[in-house]
Length: 236
Ligand SMILES: Nc1ncnc2c1ncn2[C@@H]1O[C@H](COP(=O)(O)OP(=O)(O)OP(=O)(O)O)[C@@H](O)[C@H]1O
Ligand SMILES: [Mg+2]
Image 1 (cartoon, rainbow, N blue to C red):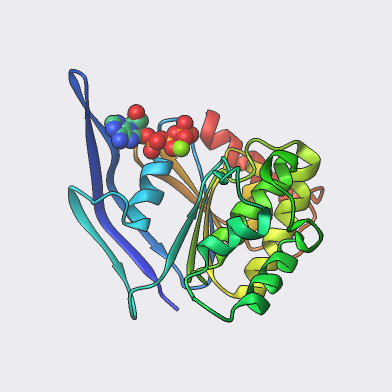
Image 2: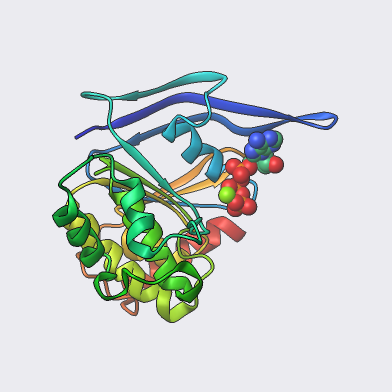
């Protein structure tokens, strides 16, 4: 698997009348197989950072290096972006890189994300949580070594979010990949991550290691202390 090292990465955009430094002089090491949470105010550069990692944006300065052979990335967004005229199974099938005899893999993937019983449904019949499961299955089809998630559960109710974060944690363990999760939910970040990166004005403001054993107890004093610590840095 691949370790990713970002050194002095910057990316600016020209918006009417002024230059916006979306990411500036950012240094970060993402260990192979780790779970990294990224948190920060709206506009601080989180999505731009994910796009840089996925190769959808190129840095103006600095380097992004991966050890080993070029790793496969998958990026999942806040909205599921499903094709409405295809069923759950057909939406996921589209993302499978292999041609031919992969029905077994497809079925296993649908089961992994809890969609085994729903594969014949069209997107308009899905709940928000189910639609995000389809998007997750689609992102996992390429067998990514690095999974990039941009507020994947942001539009869901608190109950569904908790259920999906539990499932994501299991899937991360099962598939042994690196996950980089952008979220606005501090508890979600602390529950899932080995390290929570706080971004501010396009760069890293703080990095907090979460050394609690899994599964984590959100009510434990230590968990609560880490959440408060992050909250204080974000809003302080
Ligand atoms: N393609 C683009 N063209 C022009 N400006 C852009 C582009 N992409 C991002 N920006 C600007 O870069 C800054 C960072 O945007 P980015 O989407 O990375 O923020 P974010 O942290 O993901 O915010 P949010 O939490 O609201 O999703 C913003 O000021 C945004 O307007
Ligand atoms: Mg964003």
